[in-house]
Length: 86
Image 1 (cartoon, rainbow, N blue to C red):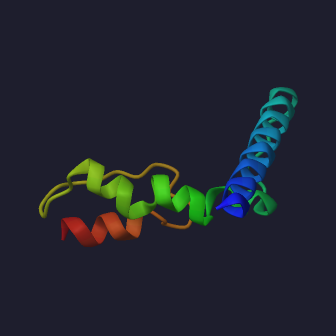
Image 2 (tube, rainbow, N blue to C red):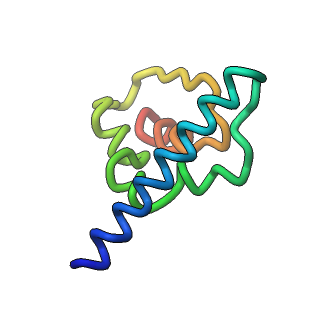
């Protein structure tokens, strides 16, 4: 349990640090999200809170609905959403 709390605290500190650095860097130049920050979006902690299945369950998608995903990237939400509305 102690290791889990330490890992979680360390993850949060790193995430907050990277987030603050990125926000500062973007103010001076337009910078798209680099590939080395992908771990920040795709990891077990984020998937537990805001994974694609969790987000789509909150949307209450039903067959026959229409979905517009602007800036869909690699399709992390688009493909599962399309499967739900078919």
